Image 1 (cartoon, helix red, strand yellow):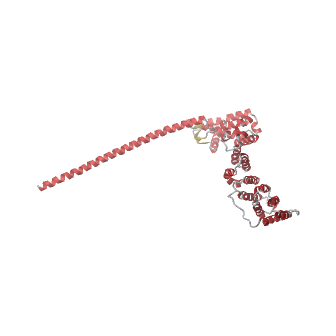
Image 2 (tube, rainbow, N blue to C red; image 1 turned 60 degrees about the horizontal axis):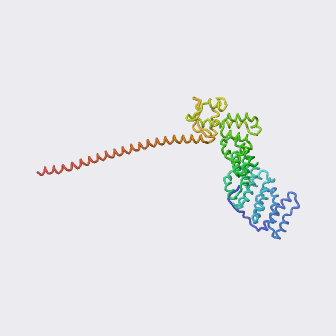
Length: 435
């Protein structure tokens, strides 16, 4: 996979190495039954006329035969070809064809072919200038090979470099979108649903305002919406509602947009009303009705917890009614909503109550800001009270210290006066003796 830029060091002149590679291709083709192959002779004639780029064109086209090369010779042969191509000032003219050849199956190594192709593609990527746009096309080929070989783990460490690369290549919105979608597709095929959704959203964000109503934007928006609705651990839909291309669905696909709004802020009753109003639509749209029902129950319970008020508790019977489940299933649903990270709390079986420690707001609007402001006022008042107590204690402590200091000074003065008094009496006693 891509890494720090490096170079290939292969000894020999361009003419010597060209003749060596051409001879190898001829031998390879003849072993496959193509007795007419004469790449060595054709390139020799072109070299006499100093037509190096024409020589390279023939070598690159002939390089298609390397997909039948023995596994132990594959990397060495391709490294030689890449070294020769890098001698040309027009290297970008040859690399796309090499990438195309590498994206085809390596028939001589069905099991390790993907790894061999990725090794060569990584070499091409790393021997190309960091700012060269050819790296973009090489990376797209790498993604195609990874997708074909189900090798997402090879890609995972490189994703953190993606934005830096796009910036270095000065990629426009269309090409960035193409790359993000390629990553999303690779992740989706590998079952990496979170990565697939993340890069799908990145692709949606590349649409300029004048293109958010295009057919491509609509298709990707619906794809992202369906992915978010059916994703088992995705519960925050404001990442979607904030996109202009999603807002366009309000007019182009109002039923989808209505469903999104329900999952964004409404409750199970609203979802059931939606299904009654659009009978059979969920199934016709290819959405998983059971998965949607489960997610809507979890979201409803999260909303109830967030609006529980000062009591911070929910009775079992209230939960059962809102979720439309038997009372004996309430604890299971509470455990599920805690596992989903939407709520924190504990169950009181004795009191048949769910005690809420923390809850997540599904939509953060004016009401939530007012509640935050109210809580901040309470905390501020509490802190003011604590500060007053601290100041009072500090004042009392200072007063006590001052009182203690005064008492100590008084005792010191008294003791000092006693000593001076004793000294005055002693001379008088001596005078009496002298008399």
